[in-house]
Image (cartoon, rainbow, N blue to C red; front, side, top):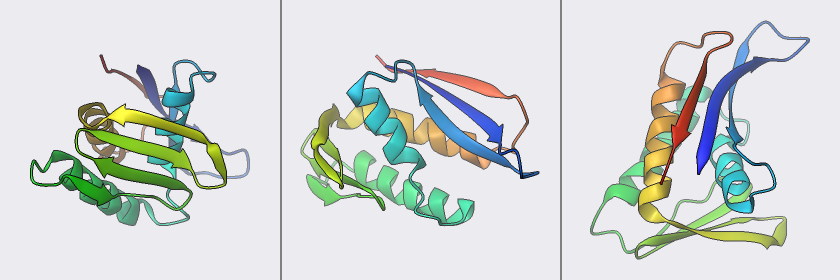
Amino acid sequence: MIFTFCYFKLPDSDSLHATILPNRIEDDMESLIASYLVDNGGASLKSHIEYLKGCLRALESPSTYEADISSNSYSAEIRNDGVRLSFLYDEFQSIKVSRTKLQDITKAWILFLEREPIAGYIETMRIA
């Protein structure tokens, strides 16, 4: 899986916004993971980072066998070594991703969000 982290500016705004682009939009797994991670539900950046850090703690904890780390529009349920992700408004959009892969991409996304935004800055994340 390959993800691109980048900043974009809306035409009527002066501020930069962070997003994740999957390598292949037609790849359901990459698209669902990217959408889940950027789904802030309208929360502030600081609040969204804190939410993601909570998800990361659950993903990293060897004592967590089951946990709900859902976002505003995406269901995310840890079950042993996997995470079931699905779009809440379309039950057919569902995937299972390895816990360590979601952990790696979440960690990288948090680090990206915590940096000072730079227009035109792009970062690529590869997960085997």
